[in-house]
Image (cartoon, rainbow, N blue to C red):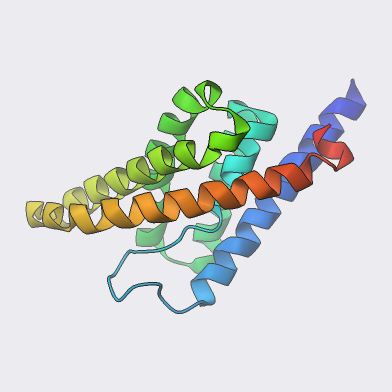
Length: 170
């Protein structure tokens, strides 16, 4: 029993640390588009892998630990709120639908999650800026969300295949 708890803590820790590393790598890369807010979301590969490998509760731990630690280390309170809102919207949608998709359709779960993430961020942007005009930015973010969501989902499929070979995920 204790072995299983330690194994689960180790798995969550590994995925969270990997997500943080991807978060920091992406923060150092040049923007993928000249449009503010458009990002690939590399850290989401690990959140998505956690969902399919460990289930909703443990994936929530990976996601929220990554958002919290990423916010603390980056020192951006505004970025933290955008990340948290997007992460919550994304996670809620993905946890509701992921059991209906096989592992070769993870990209579809990721696309739904990415679109929800952008909706969450747009909602917070409207609330923080008190400017409904931010909604005009929605089509750009939604299109970028679909593209990056598909990319992240495909990457997560490959990561899941590799992680299943580790003793932590058997």
